[in-house]
Amino acid sequence: MAPEDAREFETWAHGRGVRYVHTPVVGTLAPARAGKLGVYVGGTDALARQTVADAVSAYADPDRLKLLESAPEAATAKLLANLALAVTAQGVAEAIRLGGAEGFAAERVLDLLKGTSLGWMADFKRDFTLGRDTADAQFSTDAIAKDARLMIHTANDPLPATGAALEALLRAQRAGLGDHDFSAILQEEAKRSGGSQAAS
Image 1: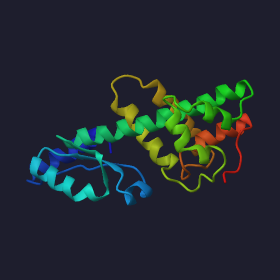
Image 2: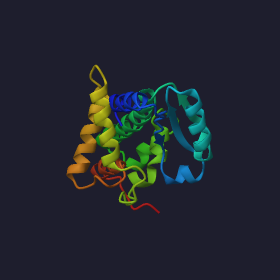
Image 3: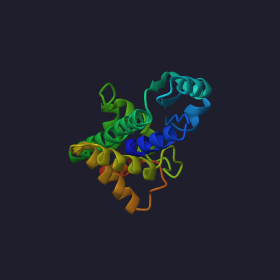
Image 4: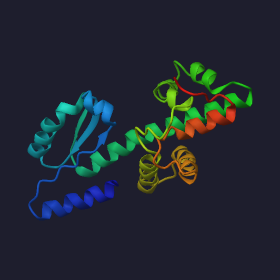
């Protein structure tokens, strides 16, 4: 949801005496089952906000359960989290492209990224990058592309890195991979570099 939409819902709710709390989450089924989701609880009513936070704490990582003072703040927090995913994935894709230009297979690039700011994404999506079927989606290309559009629409100034990530996601969508995991953009770069292989 765009922050402006969350603001509109919040205003509408207040006008009708409804205590509205916007609660977007970051994560997929596996972290939800492990109680490791990121959850943003946003609303102007402190009691309602805390009540919702208590209710969702069973599946939220305590360090990633954030209370925010309005619905649009919660919506913005979710976009910030997904911007980090999109831009970091694009960084890994470009690292694979750069390494490929010098004959490095994708697997070697991923190994060399360990310990860098891109290393966590390289590890997080390593199996998909190296050939795991991206149809087993954890976070779909369509979903993160939708959020990337919202990021660009929400910002007052250009977001060049987000724009580059969106272009890669759009290429994946055009290739019929919209419902696949967004790491399809990494796998495509790995294939180009000759470093993609069947994941074990």
